[in-house]
Image (cartoon, rainbow, N blue to C red; front, side):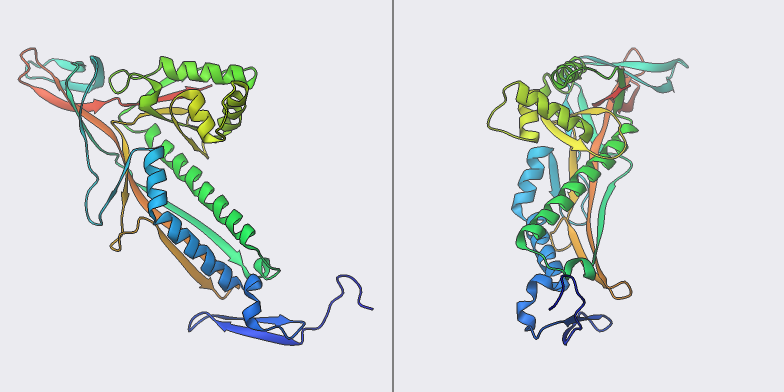
Length: 339
């Protein structure tokens, strides 16, 4: 009688050729036809994953969801990111690095009146989104289901979203158009923390680029999601879960990020955007699957390049007659650091 987990000598085998340099051989303990082995064939798993990722990331569904989350554009290959020219909604004093005017006076502060035009341009650093996953043969040969494949794809896409948002937060933390406000981290129960965070966001709205939280996208650490979710439940937010519930609670679009905690960012929807670069074939995302014969695995890489249009420029007067002007950085994004 065969005991549980007892070794059984393989009696048959099947082979598959990936390309001119790579292939695989799989031994079986029964004479099973290869066409019935789809649920244990690594190449089938990788092929299905790439097909699903291609259909979603380079389809209309992802573009619609991306546009709903943050203002963005999808520009053709070889073109530049589209800047914006927007009129300010309130007076604002701008501080900048000292400049000399014609009267040999050192000027480091200027008035930007309501109605002044702000020009936006990409930040100095673009973001290359690159996520790599290694799928070993021995991890898949035990078998997989449609459900497990879908769960893995969902987890990878979620990791890409959070990681990319974290890199965006890092770029914005040092951008010239980001002003920093230091606040004390709220404490207490989730409802109390959420109320204090919403108050901090509300009190630090930049009135020149928005008048309410609904005019902004809130970029926040993923560690705050659980707290805000609990607060949304306690507040009686019904019919929505996850990010949607938090957006209903705060009254603004929300984008969590992972990695280093840079604080909370208030990004004005009308003044900032992401500019995704399309390839020559019109796809934003490039998905590559490469067979690694030396390690008996597949390497999957998902790539995209995006420019962050978040640098604001405005012209200020350096002389009383207004004849001498200079283009200086305009603070559009508010970064709230919590300590």
